[in-house]
Amino acid sequence: MYEMLRNPVDGTRLRILAWLSDPAVAEHGLTADDVATRLGVPRPAALTHLRLLTALGLLRTSADRLRYRRDEMRIAEVAQVFDKGW
Image 1: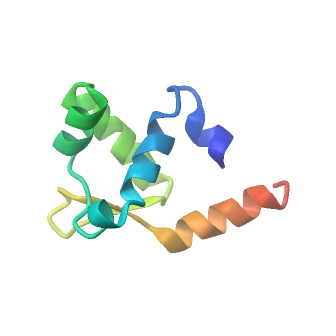
Image 2 (image 1 turned 135 degrees about the vertical axis):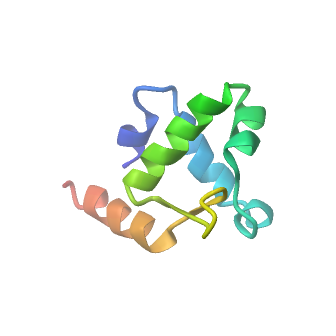
């Protein structure tokens, strides 16, 4: 799983997932603006990363679709598949 998330963008998606695992951040989730500011990238780039992670099922959005949180069950499922050697 980590290789898939690390490429092709220097681990940006993996950093987003790691950041979202911080309990202080996990409670409220992140917006695209939060990610853009923290990573120093334009908002559209941050949004692209967040949408990809959501499409993969690793993130879920709030009801208003502005905040992103980790989907811990899905992350565990994907990690298990990769740990077994696919």
